[in-house]
Image 1: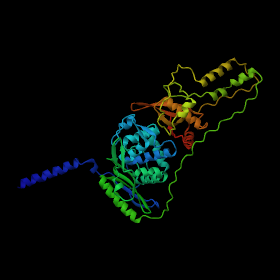
Image 2 (image 1 turned 180 degrees about the vertical axis):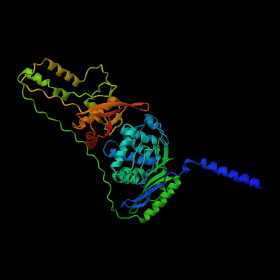
Image 3 (image 1 turned 90 degrees about the vertical axis):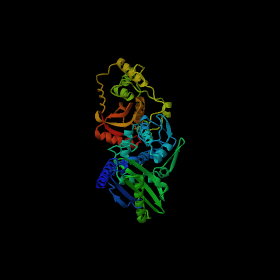
Image 4 (image 1 turned 120 degrees about the vertical axis):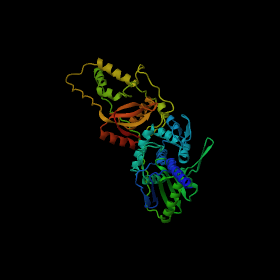
Length: 484
């Protein structure tokens, strides 16, 4: 009997050890954090590690949607805009909608897919549509986060898929929740979407408290192994309004129970008086077309020789011809789109997706452009002109082009000609601000794809920072990069 008891005890011990080693990932404790804020007053009603760094997981999509809503308000996107699924998006880990590369989805459906299904493939495709590349879009997200007060947040992707460098805090996510509500009140209502039907399939919102907790109007769930189960919520009851965040739940049910308990206690002591000043959206004004530069008429020319000398002046040649480089291994000149083609060009933000019909690439052997032909004609006329009299003061040498080690990047594109067209458009919109600098389409590879960075080179650090700031005021998105 004793022998049987000993064997039974040993077996139970072995099962306990094995059970611990085989415990599912969700049972492992992720770092916990929670915070509740009275949205009427701004008072913190509960705080546990609210300023400690945590992984946001799919809470990241709140920022992806913030960027999207901002572009809608600026008129750069609309609910009807078509988002094309990319190869990178289609290859993303679940959860996802399952679109194939090249398949299109309307922006309104994409937003609902992020809110309900938390579709990673749609988040990546949307990021690439807006930012050219997901990495570029993540930089824009981080910069915007810092601008709106999320000072302890860094984004590395648009979906929330695992990345050790992607960090946030409970306080920052509540700041973002309030920003979404107050800057985009109409778009924010989409966070209350309970079900979403697409191509015959209906998806339920992962935030089950939407239908189980009275007064909840959003907003987002998130989960990875490293983050645990996360949730940001907003509740309005009567004249009370609280927002709350919970990070690191062991399961969705435990997280929801924790959130419900925090909300109950917070609503009991929340204020009905609004004393907190709401966030005010700071939008760049619409770009003002640059006023055409009116040159004074040249004085009448009495002799053909004098006219030839004026035509041959170096300053005139420089004013009419600007060389555009497209990378160290490419020497082809990008075509300048005709006026009608420009009228069809889609508005872009940062590195928005390319136009439906990419511009053709011209081989180096084709005839030069009109401006190049004009330059050649000026040189021929200068060669045959009468010599300049000795008593004429010498011409000033043209100022050397800036050669600083920094560049301003306005986007990344799948075609070099498209990159050059956007650089040409940015130069025109900037009203002379970019004229002294070289426009370069720098090729690079992302996976199996060849892309082109649209950059203006030659800045020093101070000039790059100030110029990029002025470009943003003109709604030309950019960031400063060190020249390779």
